[in-house]
Image (cartoon, rainbow, N blue to C red; front, side, top):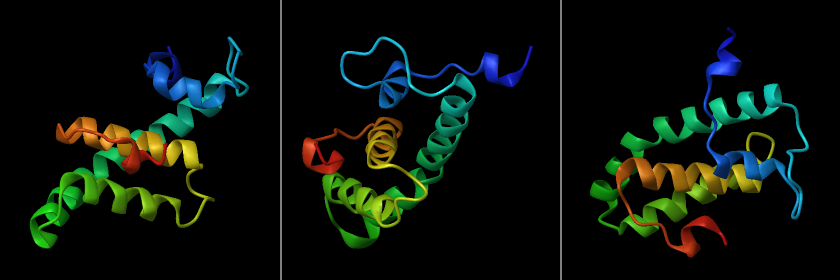
Length: 106
């Protein structure tokens, strides 16, 4: 069985590829899996830097998440706006931090 079939992708991520009212994503599973792996890896990689920024800058968790989101959105060739928002929400989840809409751009 291929790794692609074994990767469990959260519904919240799959929905990034579904237009409103659709029941199926617009991209094939292989594309969604590759994008998910990329976004999940980024969220995991940002855990330590986010903790460091919280301590170094003496700012709130919300401020750190907003900074991370701005950083991810600097160049939209790496992440779409929706993917950047998902990464920040996943980062907050990994850190156990609350997420407010300002930090996710909603």
